Picture 1 (cartoon, rainbow, N blue to C red):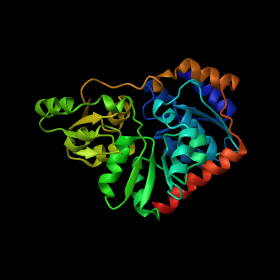
Picture 2 (cartoon, one colour):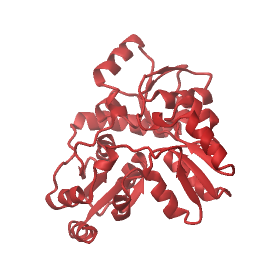
Picture 3 (cartoon, helix red, strand yellow):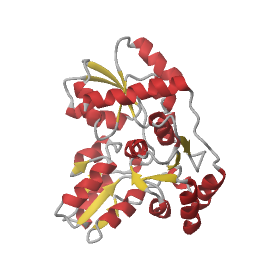
Picture 4 (cartoon, one colour):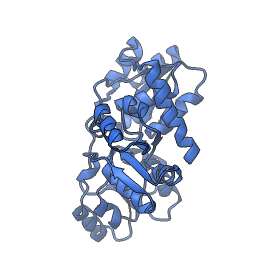
Length: 299
């Protein structure tokens, strides 16, 4: 199956992008693996291919399309959504904007293209605090993840954040009990958790980092054992890039079922038949691109 995918990919001059949370075999067959914004940006650097296969969830493929409007972007698992992104609906965001006129909206990249289009600026988990700190307003609407908002508010106490009450169901499963047990069992381990985890878990961890931040930290750290508080798919890449170090999930391995919807069969079918293309209106692309470009001004 992998050999067939590679042959079709080469024949069609396609590029396969895979998120850090994808299944190991999907990561291994991809041309590039990373977080959603890294991959979308990577797609803009690929000038010799107009066919992008995005192995992830819908908002990620939409972001790739927004940044690459002239290329065809496909999502092999077309029903792979994101419950966190779905918690911020356009009509509800518009109501909040009406209640808070002139307050800029900062949207986490984990939002739909339509929500990005009505936002002032986007952010990632790694640059959210920098964006909020530098945006010229004392008050900011921050959506959709409340726990990431907590993380940002700690770092930018001088600003008032109006937080959306959204959450990632995967990261919310990590508990302080998991962390305490890990401390007892692995006394020399570094504990790294994602800022979408609950506040008490963030407070007790050694580092609160994005997936890209965890990958960087694992490489430079002198520690040999790491406890990881994020979706279990990242551990595959951590082990590949650090073969002489050990990585364990914080408590039971937590799985995003939407991320695991992409299979080799679906990937092969998508490549062969060019099905499940991401299509966005020119207006949405233009406005959402403006919010993504605005992020670069503040980081």
